[in-house]
Image (cartoon, rainbow, N blue to C red; front, side):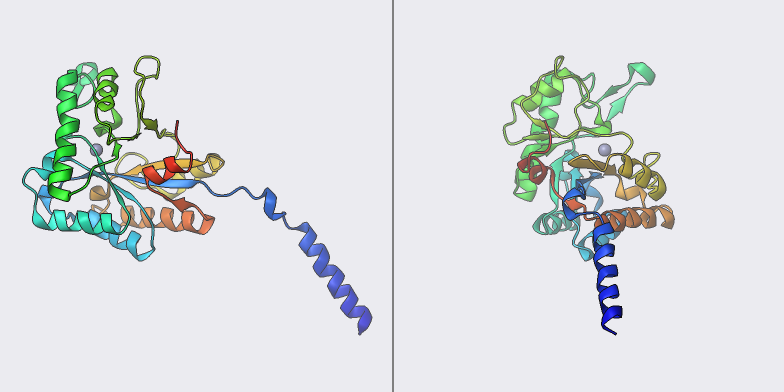
Length: 262
Ligand SMILES: [Zn+2]
């Protein structure tokens, strides 16, 4: 009997030795869920409502890109909903004013690419003003529609001290230096493949290839996720995968406070 107990103890010790020591296990990255395109004048679209009901149920922090123009004459339900998400710790951020573009192909002009400096500055500052007037808060992060920006965007942002974080800057730092903390996009790691369509398998492939990074900012458009039930289901699968892996969901400001970004 004693011999058997000793053998069992030895077997247990060997099994313990064969597992990876805790110190060599790399911690999962921080995750910013960059969710775009909330317009408060449209009330609360079911895509937003269902996405955040899920995130809140699982205590997952995300962000909401707010379009300034939608705050000019907002639906009260949209405002109430935004404030409730802010109170839960989700970060609301400045996603420009009109989310507009004109022209086609290479000649296409976007709100923050190809527009004059003065108009870009107004788009940013008017959205900041509306955030303060309607929501009672100063946005601290900026992300341009289509992630399209140029030198004038950097100059305009430099005049808005409240904005400290930029997701994602398109032009080089030589052509357009900035004093904002930049959170970079890794194209291979996304929620949607292609845009508007969450894809769990492609996400996992991208995530595992870049899991060694300290921070991954992953972008999506909740309003598109209720067009087919599979889309929201794929997003939920992505979030549960990240949770199971030990990823920490943070806001852009929290990420920069922890040293992420450049
Ligand atoms: Zn957008």
